[in-house]
Length: 211
Image 1: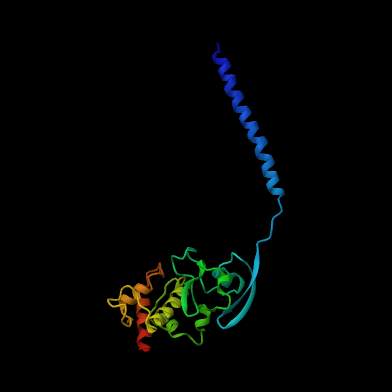
Image 2: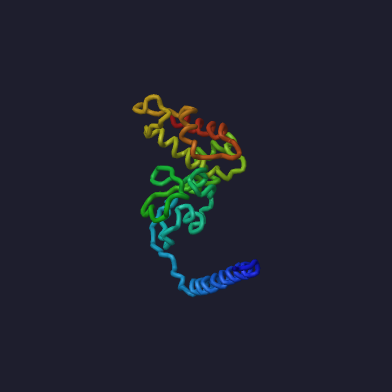
């Protein structure tokens, strides 16, 4: 029969053997992994037109449009917020339509016309929406403001082109820049400071001037 001492030795032996086995199997794998050659990420050349200027960039194929604008073209007005397409801080206008640039690869936009906040206006020649945001205090911390303005410009253009939304009673009718309509279309742009009412006032002013 086995006694308590025999059982104790067996448990110690099993534990020691298990540790030794783990060490023998793990260390060579780590060393082998570190010895593997690190391949450079695949790159491709993409031609973009940003704010009227043509650029040919050789990029990692995984590079987002947002990172291309910020890191490669130094257009840092476009902000990185959630990086999941949920806050709208990275909104830019591509071929007249607003997109979340954090969810779009740069390679998808070969030959596209891209407009960022820097391309809408300048300090000495503001876009009407930029001027309206200033007049109505449509920003506080300012982080989301570039995306808000780009989205607001695109929203009014959508309404002028007759693009319907699901808050319309009649989607076959021409949409109007009502408070409800603007709120619905801007719902993808989050302002953590809560300047929504001021943003809507700015949009209503610009919509009225184009009526």
